[in-house]
Amino acid sequence: MNFLAHLNLAYPSEQLLAGNYICDFITKHQEKEIHQSFQAGIKMHRWIDHFSNNHTEIRQINKFFHAQIHKYAPVGTDIVCDYLLYRNWDLHNLKSFDTFQDDCYNKLNRMVAFMPIRIGTICSMMIQDNWLLQYTNLTRLENVCKRLNIKAKFPVDFRSILPILEKHEAQLTECFNRFYMDCKNETSERFNPQSEMTK
Image (cartoon, rainbow, N blue to C red):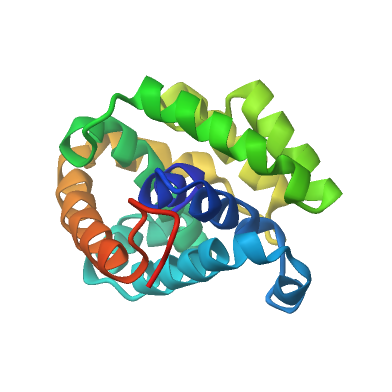
């Protein structure tokens, strides 16, 4: 899963949100150098990634995209999951997407001062450019795919998964919703995002 799902699972805890966010920009070796206030969120992010990668429904989603993008299928699944989360927002959240988004940005902005300078700069850009909106429709998702094409080490066109997403969205949604319910339940038991403390 990408930014939206990780932040949604960490919400409303400010520290868990920030730790989940910065985890994508650091290596395992760099974790020890990060401010203590981010450690619980980093741990939570790593756990979510492990849980997701080994979940039956996520592996099923990967299969939809494997013929087109091969070993990059899990990357495609990550961005598709954020799109499907937005499409099914009311099923998984009590607050509206707009309320969540604004609150999330405010909480992250308060933590920027404690982030490494490079990551803090990226976070400020994310807030300014409203990155969470990039998963809300297929046109914006295509732009995400274009950026991923540039970053990929091997030739790939992530845009090739979009027709599959359109054709099989109902099946993919069923897989995603089953997975996300499991992930939310497990995350709540282990990390309790409803408070600033974690187990």
